[in-house]
Length: 198
Image (cartoon, rainbow, N blue to C red; front, side, top):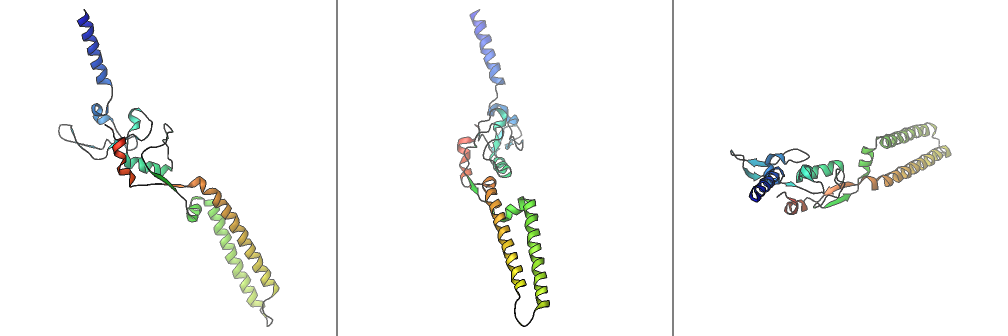
C-alpha cells in the first residue's frame, strides 16, 4: 500500500514537473513580448541549433511576459522614452542610460503651437522691417534719419527681446520634462551575461 502511494506521489510530481514551464521545456512558447519571435534557429528535428537573438529578463515581470530581446528592449526604451517597465513599473536593469538635452529645433518641432507663434512673430518682424525701410526711403531728406524711424526700430527691438525671453523661458521649463533617453550601446553587449534566459 505504501508503495502504491509513493508511486502515485512520484507520478504526480512528474506530471506537475511536465506542466511547470521552464525555458528549456517550453521551446517555442517562450517569445519576446514585443516582437513575439523566439530568436532561436532550429534544425530539422526541432532542436535548437543556435540562438540568434537571445531573450533576456531586464525587469521584475514574471511568466512569459518577462522575456524580451535586447534589441527590442532598446527600441522600446528609445521610442517610449521611459527607463522603467510599463507592466511591473520597475527600473530596467542592465542597460546604461543617459539623458540628453533636446535642442531648440526639437522644441519647435515637438510643439506646433509655439512653432507657429515663433514663425508668425518672425514673419511680422520681417514685414514690419520692410515697411519701415520703404517708408523711410520715401521720406528721406537731407537732414538724415528721422525720429519716427528710430522709434520704430526701438519698438521692434523691444518686441524681439521680449518675445525671445518669453520663448526661452518656455523652452527652459520644457527641457527637464522632455529629456531624450540615450542608451550606451557599448554596455549592452555585456548585458546578456547576467540576464539571459537559461
